[in-house]
Length: 109
Image (cartoon, rainbow, N blue to C red; front, side):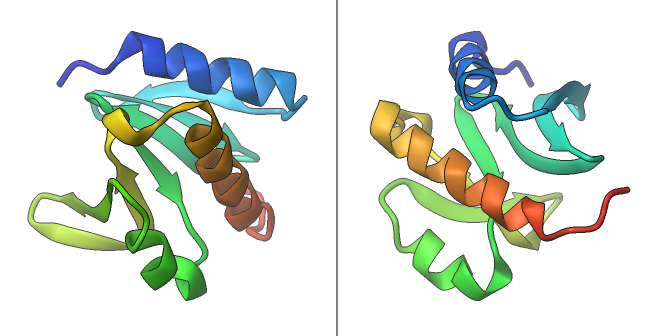
């Protein structure tokens, strides 16, 4: 599946502006952004997917445009898809901050 190049660029710009040491990698038809080997967020089609703290999953799914991260009929805990149409600059920034925070506590891979 193709991914939204404009959304990828928006994510790239924000991570660069925040001086975060993100590594960009194409995986499974998506573009992913990693920190110390852990995926933080990515763009799949027109949607953003982000890592969330498992304790915050219910709150994250209650946000506009959010839905469970599903792949091959299975739901992945600790991950949320966010519909591209709700990702204005402020909302995108909030999701990326939360994802970076959720990933920061993980050990490097």
